[in-house]
Length: 372
Image (cartoon, helix red, strand yellow):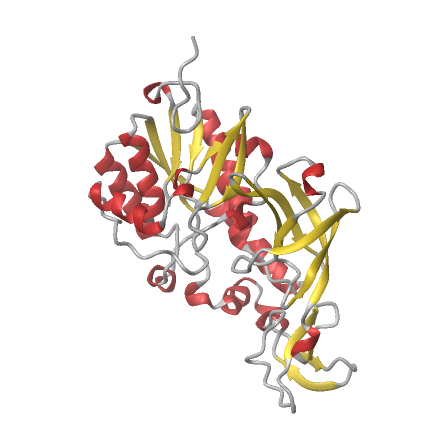
């Protein structure tokens, strides 16, 4: 006789369901661990040590630092659940930091949080959870999952200000069927209230804001540390190809940037293009920033292609709004996206994520990396 589905959509009693909770040491993942324990699941928390802290980094509002490992262990002790620490510094360096540095040197604007989810968090942690015979891997991300016909689907979170679906577009279909996101239907203040009721030491802990290995948001210092020869002077040109200034290294610039160009002109200048091959920055007026056509590479789909036929919405930066568009596939890995209205500051290295609205909300259909 079939049992009623439990709260994470599995045909088992919670007490017979083993779950791994990814515990970063923050309030979100700690609350998720508490919720799973309260609901009677067999819970093991796993915390990843991803990099070696410097004094600067510990002061910064980041995740996965040494203090976070301590906080996660305290929460696990309070909840009386098993807790393991995995030391993934080398994997993180290879899969995330090296990629971040190389991407900037190519004139791109990378998103290390996507790479982190794609590699150590959902690939390696997924394999560890499977090896431990867990029924599901639970995280504190703000995305909804809705299971239909034994297939898990990802949706934008109810709290759109906290929604993290953009950072999870590269999750594989196999991983998504195994993942669960209990906070997707909650507001952040509700999460904190649960943490307070559980008397967790992290209930009032500030949210992480900076990229974990980038102290105080200073990207160029990280790149200089790993690639000391990366700061090469080069020309700043206008759209006519005329040299109008000199820069100290392309890693100091992003598409759409206005401040810090240090070139005077009768109109405000913005970075229109970063030409890594020639070590040049191309600048122009704001009217030249808007783009309607985007070429994507390394497409990852979480839906059938026929779902991308019409009424598609896309997001081209994590803080951006949903934009109406159509998606044309060139082959399995590449696509051309045409926006209904032009958008400023679209940058290679960022992601373009596909959404479609249905009765459950905005479904994540997949996405790709912006090539040009």
